[in-house]
Image (cartoon, rainbow, N blue to C red; front, side, top):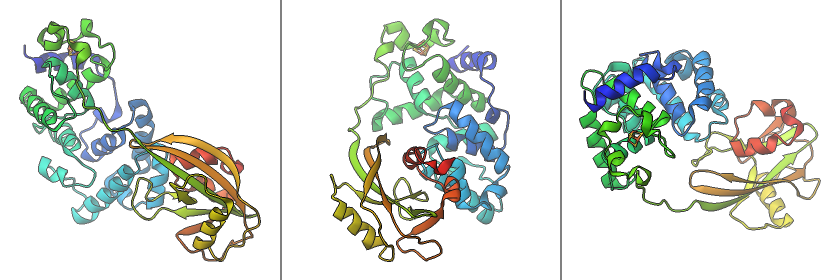
Length: 352
Ligand code: SF4
């Protein structure tokens, strides 16, 4: 038996039953793969079921309202994934006649689909011989072959790709890929891997050489950059003024508030001037009052956020400038917002 046979026979006995493993539908497999990027399986499951129930095929998703898609995604973070998901659904539905691409190269052309996702769809949906390399697979390979090269360096990635392709089972690329990922998730875990019950320990060089705890090697990433945000929450008697993030950045397509960014300790005057600059038609009734402060981590950013409450006169019905929108209290819970803004909204009575 070779490594792949051992992996597959272990997988058939030990695999977790997950809904996206019960289908060959490329739409559902793609959906699950996009949702599961940077997301734990338990959390991803809820979102996967929500998406397949709300949008059972590509047509439903392509014809949805972007705001609803973002709302259904809310809480998963990395919102560019949701924007790409929606753009890709529209592209496949309108430009490809609703037919999912059937080759690795054409899958790779889809927005938001990189080499890992293209290989996953190609092998799981069509049984094409493309090896997946995600974090779990990289860890397993680095231990199996006792690799000294850092797995996140360019050379390391190249080596992993070629080792993964070499190892791939020619007749069962789908099962092989699932099996090696499952081994990384359940047995060959980052801390204290279960080598004693590992189906490939006889082939594992790190296990034989006693270097398991030293693998994988990684190049240290630069530290997350600090980002300070002062949000100004304008509240009237009927509702709150939100801002729509139209331009790029992590929160594009979501609602937040007028803000001052990367200004340390702005004065009340500076905040009021900012509000006036964006919304000259709004009449301010009170000085800014800090109502919430929190720290929030994104992949490359360490955010210090403060929320400042400012009372304004009624603006309901009037057109607002600067991508701002007046939202009645009862409609606030339906708005797509970032996890950071949601943390603040949970402190208010508006989500009840
Ligand atoms: S023997 Fe241990 S280190 Fe090697 S692949 Fe199995 S779990 Fe990972």
